[in-house]
Image 1 (spheres, one colour):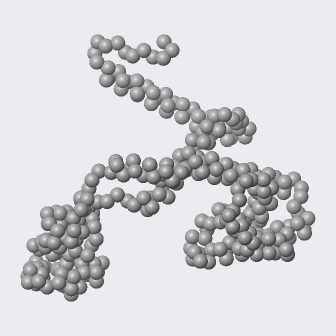
Image 2 (cartoon, helix red, strand yellow):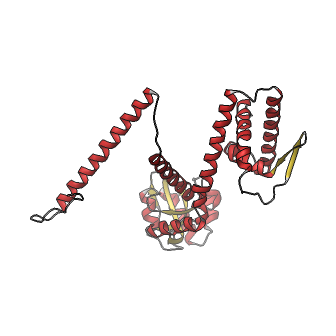
Image 3 (cartoon, rainbow, N blue to C red):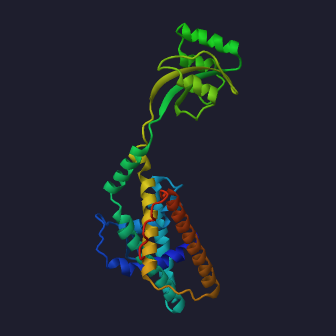
Amino acid sequence: MKRAKVVRLAAFALAGAAFLAGQDRVWAEDAVVAKINGQEIKESDLKLAETEVGPELASVPADKRRRVLLEFLIEMRLFADAADGASITTGPDFERRVAYWNTRAKRDAYYETSIKGSISDALVRGIYDDKVKMIPPEDEVEAAHILVESEDKAKEVLGKVEKGDDFGKLADEYSSDPGSKANGGKLGYFTKGQMVKEFEDAAFALKEGEVSKPVQSKFGWHVIKVEDRRVKPPPAYEDVKSQIVDSMVLQKGQQAATDLRGKAKIEYVDAAIAEDVRKETAIAAARKKLQEEQFEEQLKKMQPSGQPEPEKKGD
């Protein structure tokens, strides 16, 4: 790993240690994982490191990540100790770095507790259930096909199917579709709009177990067998849970930032940045005013002729 990353995390560890030491959070099994010159590295240290560099380990096999995290922490501790030995952990520059990572550690603690921590499984499940209710029912079929180059060949294959030959074996023997022939011609479940129109129309016109007459598409000639018909089930909760949580965290984080900014006195001292903020604020105000005017116009159009307009607050 890059030395810059190690130095950055070393500063984070030094800054965050004092803050986290005073917290009530306790890991159930905070076992010692390794020691460096008598200094302990615990499970809790691995968890902290994972929150920082976990996304960078996506390509590392799951059974190897703990070892990688530990080696990372060992290297970080060695660099930190070397910094102490070189007497470079004092002075204004280092203090600014520590102050930065102290603020970052506090920010992360607030985010984990007040934003992510406020999202319970029950809340996520409730949103999932509400979203599922809004999904319109949609029919889908499970089909298999045999793709050949001519109508005559399709009729020949269909004749074999009608005589009782196994559809899957015929697909393996005759089909020119490399994506399905080795799997008995099976295409899995699909809804309308996922296949070319000729194929789709024929498939959805069949009942479960029925086989089509030869159907031509831009790919060639198909003999289609419908294996099953059903209403498409909603996505499983576990498959979409993380997406819902991520969306909620983003929304709650943005709202929290807006609320905190509204209570704070923020002064942009840098002239260029201050001018950018002024322009952005003016544009946002103009956009809001335009939206309000458009809304009022819509209300006027909806108001029956001859009826007085609703009184505005403050009049």
